[in-house]
Image (cartoon, rainbow, N blue to C red; front, side, top):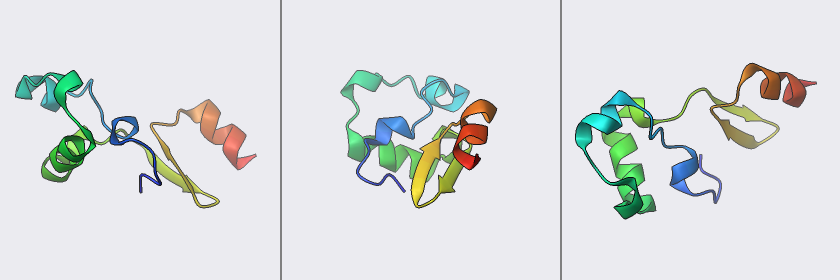
Length: 69
């Protein structure tokens, strides 16, 4: 799903679930972020939308309307 994007684009650092972990986001690499998202799906930024083969994370209504046309 990441399509060569860094995992940080998909990761929800504002999630209460992340804050409870007490981790320093600066010390987490892509593999760490992916592992955390696999263990706790609430750490994935939503919505996740695939349009024309591209994936968008946390796209708001305006962005989605522009993409859909």
